[in-house]
Amino acid sequence: MAVIGGGPAGASAAREAAQRGLSVLLFDHAHPRRKACGGGLPVKGIEWMDAPESSIECEMTSISFTLKSTKLKIPVSKGKMVRRDDWDFYLYNRAKEAGAGHIVERVTSLELEKGFWKINGKYIAKYVIGADGVNGFTRRHLMDRIPREHLFAAGGYYLGIKPTENEVEFILGALPGEEGYLWVFPKSDHYNIGYCFNAGTPGMKEALHKLMEERWPGEFVDRKWKLSETGETVDCKQFGSAIPSYNDSELFDEPVSGENWVLCGDAAGHVNPIHGEGLNHAVLGGRLAAKAISKGDPTLFEKYWRSHYSRDMYRAAKTKHRIYGSKFMRIGFALGKTPAMFEMLASLTRGDYYGKATRNFWFKLPLAILQATFRMKHKELKGLS
Image (cartoon, rainbow, N blue to C red; front, side, top):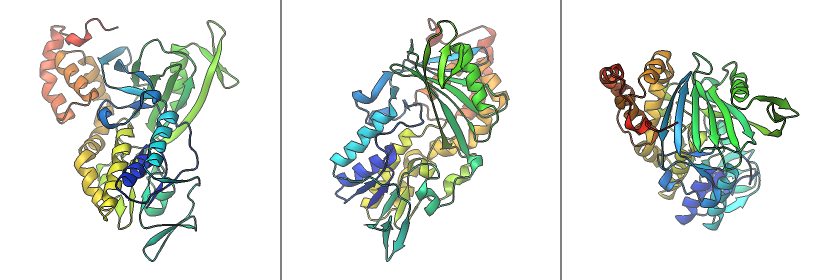
């Protein structure tokens, strides 16, 4: 079998397949490489993400959400921040150690001849796993492209300022009425900062620049950031990418596998539509794709992924517009510090909430209003800056 793409999804698929006794060729032309990604491993599923200490830059201490002047800060204990180049390269090497062969080539042709795939006109495989990203070669060859209206545009900078606290920040409402956010992620010696909005949203980069000027007053000078207070110039390397973000849950109904192929990770569109997180689904999806092929039936992937994480995908797609709606946001942040609302938000953030969040939000609303009337705050907010 062949795995096209050596990121977290592809490397995990190749390793799993090799460990299951399959002959594997892993196609990737660009390792090691730096990815346009915040590098936050989600709290949910962190136990099986397989991130060695060498790739971890810091441990999250809290995750905060800010809307205008209101900030909700939630302590966490399991989240980690990784260097994507180190972590991706580690997963890729684990696949090689398990027995996967590596072809240092970009895949540009894929032809099916007598039940076998011919790759780049010279390699033969019975099965193909496509894990080369959103609208990569395999996605475009095996399925329709993911439409622009179902994509997030993400971009930002590696800002060479050492963080003072391991707080992961999401800033909402930077572009009023638009679905998305700005982020500030701490790393060992720099910040990873960026924007994530529906593709085509005007003003994304400008909103990020405004945040930079407020947080670290300065200006761009020769592709670096010059700090106004000290005159110091720090690195400010730019990055950008597209991320699947389905605005219609019915897109998840479409099979992402066939008689002799499977798509996983971003290529399958398996990214949470609300916030664009997909690393956990990439790693797990790659392993499940390999499991399906080891059974001789790639279409089993549909059963596997749906039993593991389809609920998260469908719910997120169905509630994305409501979550980002101005009414929901205003009420949520106005009452977010009350025990009733904060408890639900903390559970969601820590990955241990399994109810229907928007339904329970309205269910808890009367109690939260009563608690706000008496200025009651959740106990975890006491002592937090």
